[in-house]
Image (tube, rainbow, N blue to C red; front, side):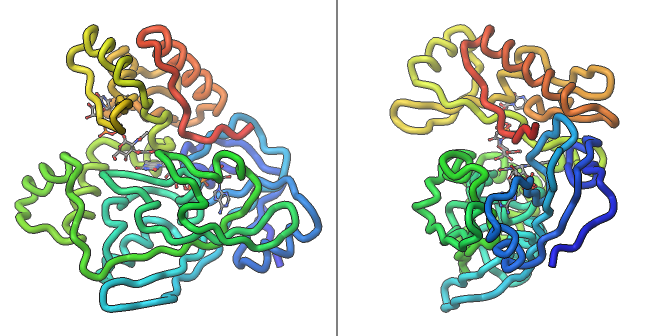
Length: 337
Ligand code: FAD
Ligand code: EPU
């Protein structure tokens, strides 16, 4: 059975700390509950994990369901690796810490990302050279149309940079109930992302293991990303744009110091944080909301801001970046209307 929560404010359930209300808030604690719920036909509910990638613009005139399906289970094990099935409602970072305790490698670069594991395949969470797609075997989901369970293998999820089928053709059509991952017992650590290497040097670590990499990532993240418990935010508000090499070369002529990362022979990724910073937005505060002072890609709520104000600020930034650089930024955060 679904258990109702009396309180209807969504403020505690979104890391931006936006105070809108929901008609009703429910918890799902098992896959069966989800199946039963949707067997009666499509239901217009909003599913949330940790609320760390959403911006609420107004009161939600439907039921909000918090996915709290727990459980970590080993389904296969060898000397080299372990396959584990994780309930969608498990907290991501606690799960990473659990893996470190077991000596299982593969998710250490993704330390300290907020939210639940059920949302991790939706935008293919990524940080410091690793994405969830690198360790994900399959996603278990329930169709919102008829309550039937479906399983999506890694390639069916069509993962890309901050992208998957769950943001495109399958958007709002499934509730993810579990994720199956394969982790390694003798992981060769990935320190390809420059900032990790320099942080490990500062820490005095020569031959890092998975826990050292996790600690380095945590230190880097804490130095620039605001803690949502102290300052409302949803991480990067925009995605880093991918442009043609030609476009990049023309920008480079105008802005010789513009950073870039190769994507393939024809395309490069440009850090949106640099574009926004260079356009003078970093640290700008408007009443009780603004652009974070240490990371221009992060919009913040200093307390009491409405989602609409933050959305309007994102509009202004989008327009300004388009006019200055001829680049259309795309929001990473899900705008919930
Ligand atoms: P929510 O915000 O609750 O939901 C996100 C979307 O998914 C919503 O549309 C929701 O309806 C849908 N959804 C949620 N759960 C389910 C489900 N079980 N089934 C179907 N739909 C569902 N992201 C990165 O990729 N890399 C980072 O480095 C990173 N750093 C961050 C740092 C900070 C400080 C913050 C606040 C956010 C950061 N994020 C990062 C973004 C965010 O943490 C991730 O996108 C995370 O996976 C969102 O999880 P969640 O449970 O909070 O999702
Ligand atoms: N930069 C600036 N000014 C800023 C911010 C960034 O000039 O204010 C430039 C710097 O040149 C810096 C470069 O941008 O070297 C990249 O910055 P950073 O390493 O902080 O990474 P990012 O591109 O801003 C991305 C992800 C993060 C992820 C980190 C680490 C996106 C949209 N964001 O940020 O993910 O944690 O890399 O891998 O891809 C998120 O998705 O919410 C998120 C936080």
